[in-house]
Structures are given as C-alpha cells and as structure tokens.
Amino acid sequence: MKKYFQFEELGTNYRREFVGGLTTFLSMAYILIVNPVTLSLSSVPDLPDSMRMDYGAVFVATALAAAIGSLLMGLLAKYPIALAPGMGLNAFFAFSVVLGMGIPWQTALSGVLISGLIFILLTLSGIREKIINSIPAELKFAVSAGIGLFITFIGFQNAGIIVDADVVLVGLGDLTNGNTLLAIFGIFVTVILMTRGVRGGIFFGMMITAIVGMIFGLIDLPKKIIGAVPSLEPTFGAAFEAFGNLDSELFTGKMVAVILTFLFVDFFDTAGTLVGVANQAGLMKENKLPRAGKALFADSCATVVGSVLGTSTTTSYVESSAGVAAGARTGFASVVTAGFFLLSLLFFPLLEVITPPVTAPALIIVGVLMVASLGQIDWTRFEIAVPAFLTIIAMPLTYSIATGIAIGFIFYPITMMIKGRVKEIHPIMYFLFIVFVSYFIFLK
Image (cartoon, rainbow, N blue to C red):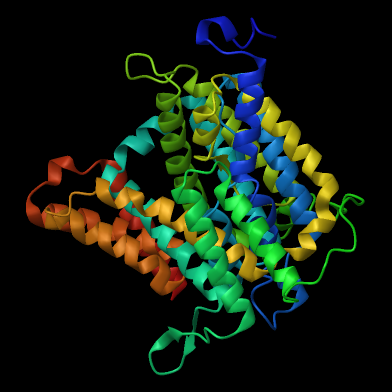
C-alpha cells in the first residue's frame, strides 16, 4: 500500500493521510445535507410531489456518488482530492432546470448522464483541453463568481432574509421571525469558524445552528441517531427513462443548453480544483499535472455513476485543500474520505434536524468562497468587463446559471470583434455563440 501510493517519495504516512482524509470529509460533509434539501426543492412550498426528488434516495445517492468518486480518484489518479455532487450545479439542476424550465427531474438526470458520457469521451480523446483552452479565462472566472452569487441568493431566500416584494421584486424579510433569526445566528457562527480557520467550519456551523434550533424549539428533536439506510429505488435508474420516450424534453434545443451547462461548469470546477489542490500539495511538475488524464477520467466516471444513482453532477471539491493542509499528499487520503461517506449512510435519521435555515449559512459561505475569482478578471478592459459582468449578474437576477452563461458567451465575441481583437477569439467561441443564441430562441 505504501509503495502504491508512494508514501516515501512524498514524505507522508498512514496517520497524516488518515487525518487529511478525515479533514476533507468534515470540510465537505455539508453536501450530505444540502444536496438532498436542494434537489428535493424542500425550501419551495406548494409544489406537486412529481417535481420533487425523494429526499432519502438523494441522500443515499449523494453519499454513494461521493464515496465512489473519491475512491476512483484515490485509486486511479492517486490524488488527495475528494468528489461529491457539486454546489452550484445542484442549484442549477433544481432551481433552473426543474423549477424554472419545468423539465422533469428524471429528464434532468438524463442530461447529467449525457454530459458525463461526453466528458469521458472528451477526456479519452484529448479534446477536453482544447475546449477549455478556447474559453477565455475571464469568462471561466465569471461563471464561477456568478454561481457563487446565485447560491448566496438562494441561501438568503431559504433564510427568509430576502423575500418576494411585489413592487421592487425582492426586499428584506421579517428579521424577528424565529427561523430567520436562527439562520442569521448560523451565518455569524459559520463566519467566525471560517475566519478562525477551523477545518470543517461550514459543517460544524450547521451542526451548532441545528442544536441551537432544537434548544429553542424551532427544530424537532431527532427520533434516533442511527437507522436503516433509505431506499434508493425512487431515483435509481431514472436517468434512463427519458431515452425511451421520443416526446421527452430530452430531445429539445432547450436540453442542449442544459447539457452544455452541466458539461462546461464541470469542466471549470474540475480543472480549477485539480490544478489548485495539486499545486498546494506540491504535486505539480514543471507546471504540469501528472496523471491528469486519470484524474479527469475518475471525475467524469463519478458523474455518470452519480446520475444513475440519482443525483446531479459529481465533481472534484476544492475543500480537499483542507485535507492537504492537514497533511494529505496521496490518494490514500481520498480512500479514507470515501470510507467516511459510506459510514455516513447509517446516520440518515439525524437529517431530520437539518432545515432550510440550517443549510442557508452553508450556501451563503460557499458563495463567498466562489466569488473570490472576481479578482482574476481584468475589469479595466471594457470588452472583457461587459461579458464577464453580464455573466455574473444575470445568474442571480434571472434565477438561471444557463442564462448567465448564455448572455456572457454571446456578448464576448461581439465586444471583442468591435474592439478589433478578432484574432484572439477561438473558433469554438463562434460555435458557442450560435448555440446560445439558439438557446434564447428556443427558450422564447
């Protein structure tokens, strides 16, 4: 085992890898709670049950997808990087695709499956690098920041801090409401923990908020701590249902934009996380990422497996950097993280205490982390600032990640051509321009 993971070469041992793997798990364990809440649209009242994914099944799918993805990354690529259903992509899946576009969640899972299969093909063929390189860095940063604002907006809504206001669209909610006060308390606690550099600060912030909610009678006490694992039947294999129906939403231009969004965002998340965490761990060699193909293959396989199980796109997690900071240097740490995700299946009853006000701080803080990419954009160049800004602002204002990406990718070639920088526009960007113009036509 030591030889396979190159413990001696990388100067590590079982203890450091175990602690690193556990730290990574604690840093990203919030997804076990946030993902079922998001995909089941539990924060949205008065919806037909057919629009909601089964809460228990999504929990199991989340844990299994994270375990399988992390295990593949650890064993194949040997990197201390864990995977799980991605934040932002789950919000796009639930709020933009299912709630906004009215596409059945089963069909949305088919879209995730297709994007994963395309990701595998692009990885094996080497085309993936060409596509990523064709998209300007500023737009990649803008997509990440826009998703961060969108997630934060949803978090404020779930907290009751922002509410519907007829005249001005949105306004400040009732800050004297018990659940809203609980969410505000959770935000303060999580901010304090994260500022102090506490590993797993988001997870522990949620736990403290839930406990306080139970103390003040805002949350019911759990009936038990350990229980039977929920059935996966409601979601397992649902991704295949749309393929047998030619009248399905799957075969529409609207779904093409959805699939491209799943694919692009997973591209950006994976590439950024792999390079960032590997660089932090000192694993980069001559500015290149060893075993990059295997890492990307593990990531894309995890998305395919996750879609079949019943969850949105599975991707590499930047929270893995917490594990690296704790000493993790090899894929053994990812194997440890995978083990903890499997163990978490036994603790499903505890999720009864996780309500929207408890998860809201996690969404808001993850949003804060994602908008850090704003500093990477050259705002002094107007031809860059316009598409970047429109990408970012359109996501929360239109309640759609896809719309934000579409607007930005349409304006980019326009502003660049007007500026006389035609040679800097990659041909693929013209293709994407046509795709997203078509997206608005079909959307209308």
